Structure formats: structure tokens, C-alpha cells
Image (cartoon, rainbow, N blue to C red):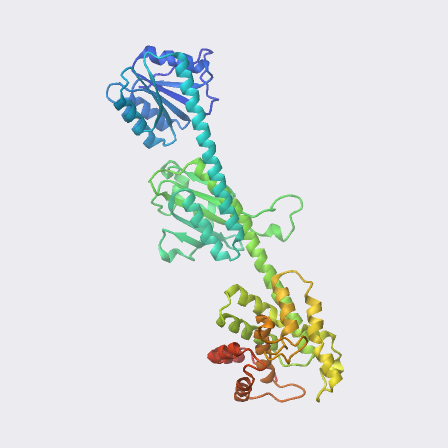
Length: 521
């Protein structure tokens, strides 16, 4: 059994966060060390043998330093250090012995001992060894905290940089599992009505669970979402209520933390905002890689990750909503121009899809092809500055009228070039350049070859193909074969030859898009 002593003031120093455990089979040594260390301001407990000490270390998480004799019955100090470090890897150890040899010193250091003192010892040496060991531990803990904060900072940076919701879910779950050394987990999103949870990402779980939906009232994750409070379970058998909701969870220890929306409370919360669920998702982790239970430290780490993830998820969804709104505005503006010039229906949509396809096939990354798709409906926005009499003239334009028409490229560029954002900047470029020609005979600048931006060359081909195939006030629709013959003739003249080759190589896809958005004449 452990031997405990009270400080001289009659009270145990329970307010001390860090504690020292002294282990020696000699009562006199224990009591002497106790008095010395308490006078130094430390909280101290005593044990008479290694077995009792291990039991105390298992039950008391506040021990930071183990001060043990080497020569003791049943379990010597070297074995005690070895076993203690298995329970508490961060525990600092000092050994004391009256039989110091090179072999005992090596054995103590090998098991992780920081220092040793000789019996009979000098009290000043004891104090110095203890203070040095505590300083070393504080430095090590500060370094660990700094490293942990640095790692969390990098995780948060990476989380904030993700713009795709599915990619964000997978990144957050993997980062969380890695950070707390867990091998199984899931991230479940709360449905808009707040009544269900859907598995959005998982690792170590059966594949059929991906995308599955559960009632928010039936699971532990649902409990966390409804209470808006994290849950750390070190042993599920100690909590029958949680165990009942566990749905036969195999692991006894796990953590669930909510991803809570920001700005969900307070006097300035909007009526619309207040109807949304406070929790966006729930992050769950189970099964430590080493088989140990989760700790308060793990919970703090996951709570930080969840906090940053919630903000990132809101940003991703806001960005998506803004993109959707911007896309609708762009299409609406394009269709207004299309309607005003009495062009056939779906022109801007077909041009957008043709442009995206050509961009992908020429090798642009997906996000850039999407920018071109979103920007291309504004290629003719400058026509708002062209008078109706010219824009809708049923016959051939005279040179002066054609000069006015050509001005729509410059008008469109001037309208868009001051706009912020990559999509609108791309729209400004292709509005300006979609009538340039490969041979330099286009307008408004007469650019030659690759002097015309790739965006303008792509949208130029898409626009001409669609315009030739549609009925206009001044012409009938061309049949597809006539258009293809025209493209062959103009390869390397009006059009970028590489883009014409890509156009023909993907003609089936082009014609599929054409069929998906038919004209309404």
C-alpha cells in the first residue's frame, strides 16, 4: 500500500497541478525527502515499493516526476522506471542509489532516467536535481506545446485553403485521426432541416455506411449535435445512456465534437439564420492506434480542429452560394443581350459548354475550364451599347454600321475590366478578344496567333460554331457539315489550328451539347 504524508500545515496540496512521487523502501529516506521537497514548494506523495508506485501512477495523472531508489525488494528502480514510462511516457525520472556503478547508471539512462544522486546524499544536490529535472520537463512541455500549436496552425491553414466541400470533409477527418493517433472515424453532416445526420466521410468503417443517413435522435453523434457540446468517453461501460446510443460500438473510448456555426447566437441573429441548425456536422474518432483511451488533451485538439473546420465549411458553402448567384447573374445578363439582339435561345449556354469542353481537352485544369465556362456567357455583353436599329438590322450592315458592331468588344471590355474576381476578369478578356483571328485580321486589336489570349481563342471558336448553326435575322442556319467545311478552310486563318484539331477530335461531344440546348425557332 502507498505511504502518504501530509504537509506540515496539515493540508495536502491538492491545488498543485504537478506532483512528485517519491519511492523508497526506507521510511527515514521517504520522510526526509518529503520534508525537503514540501519545503521547496512541491506537492509530494510517497510510496514504499514499486508495485504501489505503479498503482498510484496509473490512478493519478498529475505526476510529473518520479524520484525512486534503485535497490528495492520485488521491483527495483530500473524496472519501475521502465513500467512507469509505459503508463506515462512523459514522466521524468531521477534515481538514487548507494551502489552507483557504470552499469547501473547506463541502465537508468537507458530506461529514460534524467539524473541520479548518491546515498548518503547532500540535500542541496537533491534540490538541484529536482529543480533541474522540473525545468527540463517544463522546457520539453513548452516545446511540445509549441510543436502542437505549429502543427495545428498548419492544419488550420490547409483547412482554410480547401474550396470543395467533399475534399474538406476528407481532409478534416484524416487530419483529426492523424493528430490524435486514431485509426477509425467519421464526419457526419447535419441535414438542413436539422433532423438527420449523413455520413460525409469515413475511415476504417464499412463502405456501405458512406452516405448513409440516421435520425439525429438515435445516435451519439445526434446527441452531440443537439446538445452542441463535445463528448469524451474514456470507458463507455461507465455511461449506460451513452452505451445505449452507441449502436454496438466495439471501442470503449471515443470522442465526438460538433462543428458549430459561427454567429448563431445573440441579439443580432437574423430570422433566417436562426432557422438553420446550430451544428453543421459532427466529427467522431474511435480506436487509438496503441489501444489506449482518449484523453482531455485529445479532446482539446479535436475541438480546435472542429472550430476551424466549421468556419471553413461555412466559407466553402458561402463561396459556393456566391458562385451560384454569380453564375445566375452572368447567364441572365448573357440572355438579356441574346434576347435584345433577337438571337435564338440557349446561345450563351451552348457557348459556355463548348468553351468548357475545349478548355478541358486542350489541357487546362478543371478549375480554369470552369472559369471559362462561367465567364463565356458575357462574351457579347458589350452589345448593350449597340443601337437596336443596327443590332437587329435584317440586311447586310454598311461599313459604318459594322464599325459600331465591332465596338461591342471594347464596350464589353470596358464594362468588365474593373471588376474584381478571376471569373469577371476572364470575362473581360474574352469579351475583348473573341473576334480576334489567328492571322491577325480580326478586331478590335488585330492580334496575331498566340497574342490573343487562349480564353479568347477558345470562346471565339465556340461562338462562331454556334452562331453559324442558328437562324438569325440576316441568315438561315447552316447545316453541320457546311460549318465543319468552313472550320477546315479557316484552320490557321481565323482559328487557332490546335483548337480546330481538338474541336474535330471531340465533335461527338460538341454535337451532344448542341442537342442538349436546342434553339427555340
